[in-house]
Image (cartoon, rainbow, N blue to C red; front, top):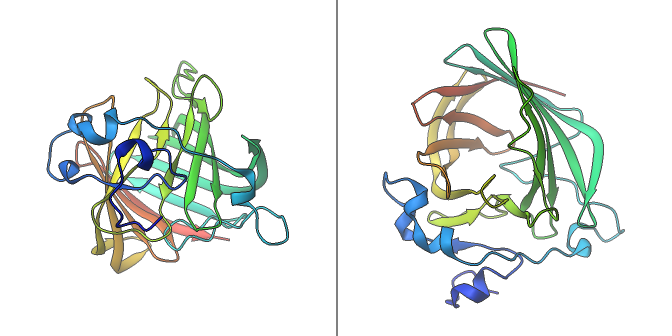
Length: 245
């Protein structure tokens, strides 16, 4: 389907790529008020074959804005003494018949463990990276309230990164009703970003929000690197410090 073809919401939201442009997301209002996207039916079609290469093997996640090469470690530092370490593991998890890559995420605040998460990603043959869920635990207390897995309890995967982002594109990143309902909108493809890891003049900027929570975040992705900066709802910054392979 051409991406500029005008189709009814019921057709768009059932298409495998689930990409829509929602002008109402532009601005400062919480994304919970963006009725078109958050209230539209969401039933992505997931076919195992769409995530396999010509040899029948899982497609490598090599999206230019979201590359996940097994063995890579991303280290981030936040403005509130937060430190986050993401590791792209060699482990996989099969969800809805799709082989996903397991990425672990450990967050500490003032040196104390705050959260441990395993996220599950897979790339389709068109180059879109899908998010199939997460197994998360918060400390202290051990809450797992944010955990969800596509195919269980009505949860559905979303697109975490498009193959060819365009300004104005908006899409669901995840869907577990009442638990995880994040959405994103592409704001820019040439943002200037400077973090400890380096300076970039061609970063992708998305504005992220939720259909069930107020507030917005700005995220920046550098080509060939991935996520380099997050600016939170309270203007907190989480900056990329290092990448090791």
